[in-house]
Amino acid sequence: MASSSTSVVVSNKEKENKNTKKVTLKSSDGESFEVDESVAMESQTIKHIIEDGHYSSLALSLSVKTTMASSSTSVVVSNKEKENKNTKKVTLKSSDGESFEVDESVAMESQTIKHIIEDGCANNEIPLPNVTSGILSRVIEYCKKHKEAAGESEPSVTSYTSNSTTNPLTEWDTEFVKVDQNTLFDLILAANYLDIKGLLDLTCKTVADMMKGKTPQEIRETFHIKNDYTPEEEAEVRKENQWAFE
Amino acid sequence: MGLCFAKAQREPSCASNGKVTARQLGILRVEESSMTSSKKRKESGMTGLWSGLPADLLSLIVDRLDLIELLSFHGVCKAWRAAASTALSKIEASANHKPWFLIYGENSQCHLYNESGRRYTNSIPELDGATCIASHQGWILVFQGGSMFFYCPFSHAKIDIPTFPLSVLSNHAAAFSSPPTTLECIVAVMHRDIMSGFSLYVLQRGANAWVKCELVQFYNVRELCSAIYGNQNFYFFDKINKLITYSVKEKTCVQHTLLKNENSTTIKHLPYVRSKSHFVRRNMRKKLGLGEDVSISICGTVVQNDSTDIIICNEEVESAEEFESCYLKGVWIQPRFFHLSPNQSWSF
Image (tube, rainbow over all chains, first blue to last red; front, side, top):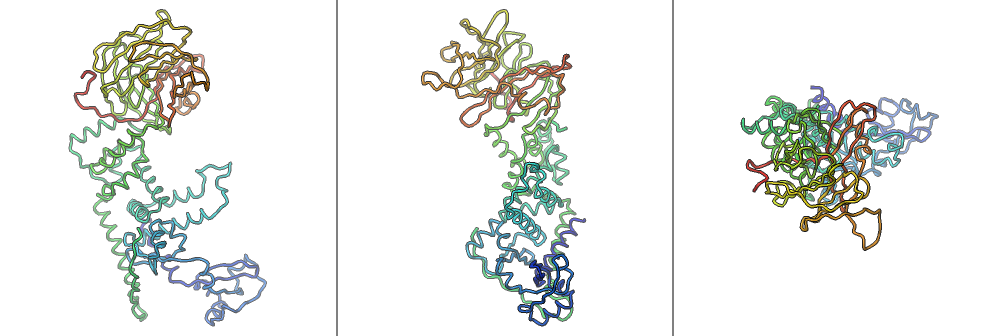
């Protein structure tokens, strides 16, 4: 049951992020940290700055190095609006009413969403009636990760000392599909509906791998499929499957 | 894909009165219902979940399976059988498959290796004491002390053909023009004996006896290592550079010498490339886990590759050790599943 509880946690996290306002804290040597407002308000100083509403103009100069910035109390707080201007966001709404705000570039990993946005029909929210929140949050996770990886222009993962199996994205993908069958099934349907080729390939490959080396009966057991063959048809099946995988 | 959605209405949020808000309630309710439906799936044993996957998605999964895995998939349930049939016919239609490798010769124990080296095992009594002399598009031609038959190792389909005039074969090269289920199938076997020299035997589809062809004297033709059919001719190659062509129409043989890459217009070009040490060059001994003391006699095949076909020549791979611990036979074969109708036979 661990995997089902994980999905609940994930969707809650997404909910938190959506409702929570973010602030950016800038250290004296120029490094920026985006944190939840609630987190930043652990600092009474920052709490006052925010509550006073003067944070767009106030600058607190202190000699605080980058490494200590996360725990320091004296930093410059910049306006969230300025941040947002750089990354366009879209809101995706799951079938069960959850809204997820993501970077437009991440959302466009889905060809379906890409077409909707390009056709100018996006408006405020893009409703996805075929995808539940639990699955949508996972799909977004996948898209974010793969968008990030694509953004890294340095092809360090293909250096001559490593091969594709040690590609960190491959490892991440492998972990990503370690889910229960219901989730895997829903991911395939979602990847197909949202037209995300990488995710569709990954999930289909996972299912295919689950079948390799198994007899028809073993596949039935793995996937909980009812045998609807007559005894004659079953005999034919047995004739076809005499080659055994060792 | 480019559908226009109506502007989404914002859900009215209830006034917060310190208690759980309507929105929060709504989320809880939804999570509950999604958990109920997944609970429902668990209760019914998830039956119908996977067998209900749409056919186009099933085919995406199935395209990644090799022929044997596909046969397993084929036998799971009726819904999946339909999806498998499409994939099976795709395999039949694709000619560019890397050939699999079949090892036999140790009683009736046989091993099949797919393109990536995965091994499958089966017991095939028909191949006990037999030798494969030709392989083409999934059919192998098998010789067993005089009796001959066509065989498909994947489906175990078998077509007996008339007895061969010789009961023992030494150096030989054989080929057939088309699948033995076609009306125009012709089989030709060139045999080389130290004592009696060369002899050529031809069998037409429907005939009940082999025909021995009159041969002219050949000069300097060494050990035969491959045979292929093309353009109404059978081509027999020796290990070095000699080629014997047999015209099916004229029923005559002509000897030729192969030249390397001459761009003259007076010289005929054959659209083939030969791979003479295919097993050795592909490091197959290691891939198959065969000991150095195993020798193996291999029957080649033809692999279609864009405009040029690649002839994988017959190969005799010697044991690297002084003593040969065991002598195996192998054949390169395309993965095909042939289902025969019950009254399929060589005669019409």
